[in-house]
Image (tube, rainbow, N blue to C red):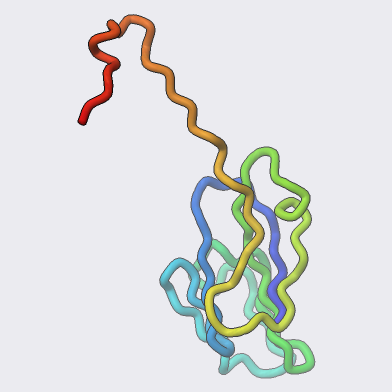
Length: 119
């Protein structure tokens, strides 16, 4: 199996688990075991918006293009991800950037009493 990753600016998350020719994408299973050699499943036929191109079996190898969620300024690893070639069964490690830090400041109009810690 060869999984190519195509960065896409989106806020949702992607979790992929592989078992043989089955991919479980965010909890939904897609079984490609019956795809014969030389066959192609065109874009849009597989009912999942994570597929970024046609799914093909070429010389016995399943080729699957997946979208890779990223933010507006991805790291090099996310912007130019390496394909996953023959990944082992189980959860796939996809390149990802850490979430941006969350910084919170209370509104200026709150008094000091209103910003004390609550136990």
